[in-house]
Length: 280
Image (cartoon, rainbow, N blue to C red; front, top):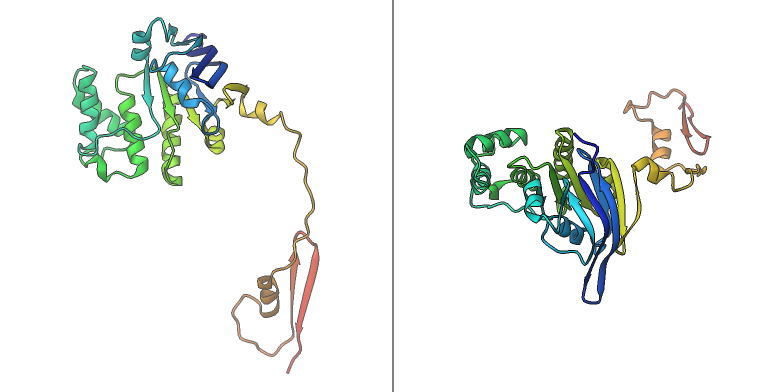
């Protein structure tokens, strides 16, 4: 592994008629790292990914992937990357294994069946490999989509909002998959509008706003931009449940006629409520 950046972006600009989407974007992505491009809808994230994956030409600036200029050497760039869009691009008529075999054949790889079986095992989909993709959950479908993107072992993968529309459990499954990719040496550029996703996954985070990168750094570095948190004392009043349990107790024992004293302390208010039952 060399120290050269896997992705280098310098002064990239892109407009659609009078709409200026990218206004001079600069950043580097280290090899084998996860880089999160964070921004709201319309910030220009997908446009930038399309430029880096040679699907769109920039109006100005330069960009390279694995040392290949995206404008001058688009063929070499395409051999070095894989792109997973916002929605899983799987054939629902085919089984999970058949989807993988199809992509391996399209890439003219030897022994596509073995490649498919290896990826099914790697993404914990072996048991579901013979089922149609239409029967897969959202998380399984996205994992299959990412597995298809990895056929041919591209050193760089672009994930454009990979957890859009997924439930919490499916999002966690995708997060685990992305972490494994980086652990195995794959460079991941991840676009997202979810703050917790960038916080969980990224080695570095760049915030794209109105077409420019306004901050770029590690999570710790970005947190230092704000003043330290302050702690304020808020008095918590006892709830009706607190009062009820203080009066009747929570053991379920019947009243034996003896005197009983119960203390309930509200942690924030530091007060004690006493209830006494007199003997009959």
